[in-house]
Length: 102
Image (cartoon, rainbow, N blue to C red):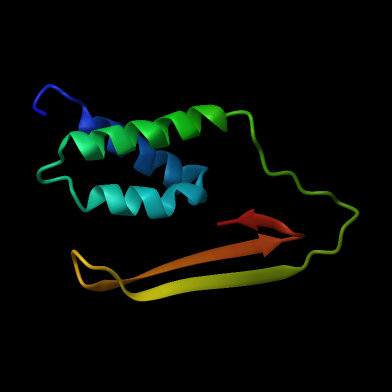
């Protein structure tokens, strides 16, 4: 695993998550838990997330001016959702005019 760019790829995904893709939050959070000693299984999972990102590069969120600006939020939590770290997992999604924002 020394020659595999796990940290660099994970850093790229974290940047994407923070700037344009909040849908990556759960998978990036899970992969970040194993940065100390990632194995081949986690590298393969990270590659699957990269393939997913490659497939959605042309997707975009659009807002229409003729719709009423309704704000809705949804929260999903699980206590303790991660058996490895024994902490709860929480995720928030906000919608404006029916489209997700962060």
